[in-house]
Image 1: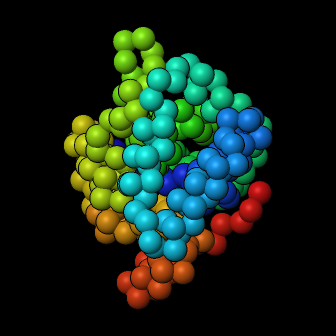
Image 2: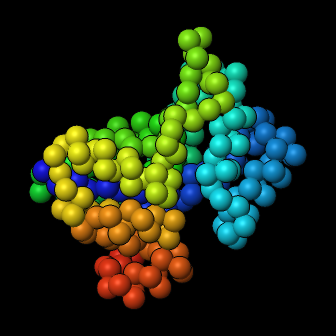
Length: 219
């Protein structure tokens, strides 16, 4: 059974969930102005190419140390329900339905955390959630460390290969949908790369390589 892997932010969703989460936490009173400025600065430096996302992720995860996992789970469920669910693209649902009808295994492959991946998976009927997970101590509190490797860039290929191996599938027979040039390694790893409303860098690469480019609309 082939696997169809899907990125989340700006692919299944019309938004970047990380930026939306920062705004949500600010409205909830969990981020002060200084925290907001730092978070915004991290995101800006990443998008401008002067900061690596893995470093930003590790710093953000470290700031969870001591917090209860149950609290983050509850907050993220509310975040999904009130701020994210309505941003799922119709074309994403259609693509998932198409692959489901073909009998393909449906996998979310995202830099987002398991706490957001779970409600997405429930909503869309996904078979596997390949995403970032955080270490939790016996008291149910975060240690501040991620579970390695991070699911980002080349790390996504590691997660995808594990899933494919577990199911006896060759990545050459699989699909991957994404919008971002940061996913280039994963696009190169599968036999059926699909570029969705891409960023400018990925559009240039996809055009040069003859990869299909699809324009997905806002909800």
